[in-house]
Amino acid sequence: MGIQLSSEIKALLDRPNFVHLATLMADGSPQRVPVWVGREGDHILICTDEGSFKARNTLRDPRVALSVVDFRDPYQEARLRGRVVERRPDPELRYMDPISHKYTRKPFPFRKPEGRVALVIEFEKARYTKLPFEHTPPE
Image 1 (tube, rainbow, N blue to C red):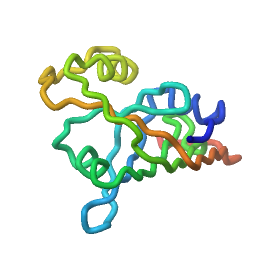
Image 2: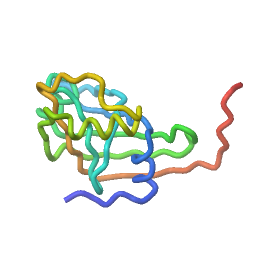
Image 3: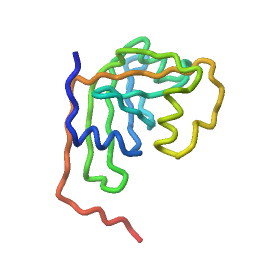
């Protein structure tokens, strides 16, 4: 049974912030990729193709690590560790389209449904940090 995510972490995941997902390759080396996410309670969904590294890696070893940084305030972030606990086929893109709407306000543009899957991730550890700095990007 996974942990409950804090309201701060849920808020970070619910906004269109990019999440960095780390999985393990067959040789044990880490593989990291930025992804979009959806949330169902204390679980997140990452949609992908069954042939992707993230899908193949988590089929062999379900352990994952994620980090998310707030788009507008990069001093607000969360680090999470968990595992893929479910793989949902998504040929109708019923999981992917709402996630695409969150990030782009449009349905997912690649309509090839064969091999689409939603990875459901449950967390064992999660940490939220808000550092006392003001983000001042260059002009």
